[in-house]
Length: 69
Image (cartoon, rainbow, N blue to C red; front, side, top):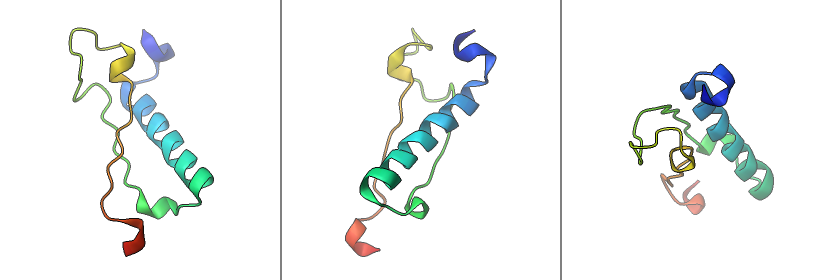
């Protein structure tokens, strides 16, 4: 089983938290400006290969500009 048996939703959350940590540490952003949602096996881009690298992704959306903080 991919991920060593860890549920996909948990892996998804860890991946998203790592990306948030990168932005917080690299650009000195507040972690409070990030909203994290783990999707796991939901919303696959490549349904023919659910465990492929294209489905192991993090999407980042800007809710508002940083100057609006």
